[in-house]
Image (cartoon, rainbow, N blue to C red):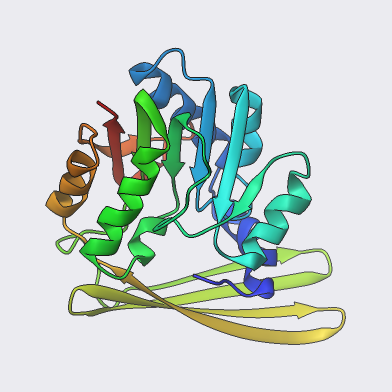
Length: 243
């Protein structure tokens, strides 16, 4: 998805204020990867967003790179990590011309794919960038049986000189979810408001596992992956090892 510059600017700030700990998540993911491949030294973060995980990955691996489709998100990541390669690219067809010991795709990014065929293409490209024995970690969007139709959410962040409110409304449309996000920001210059709508595919557990297996990886689901602060990473993680 092409996030607008306003959303990209506020993304990290809002999620951190809601309790998300990007550094702890990245450290836990590194441990998960090395539990399958102890010698892992290189990592590619696909759909790396603002680089919030990548910022820690570059400290935990000898070499780390990112890939991001959204120019707004990529601009934030490159500003944060000027010495790190953050490639423009689409997970469905990217080719960086090298392999890595690990590939991650977090933040439900694969849910934004439009079909099972696109999911299989993306997982195939990620697996193709792994060395034999390399580890692929994919965070799925919700499954058809655990998506909450009609769910509403809200959060307000108050800091010196600025108040940010974020409201969400989720509905189910067949095999997809529709998530509308509305922001309102009050600051010294006045009010600004913007909204974005995200359609995500409700792929089944079996469709994720099949995509991994057909890409030449094992397929393991780790439910309720526990982060360092005790919050579960819902609905879990798919972990594959390239055969």
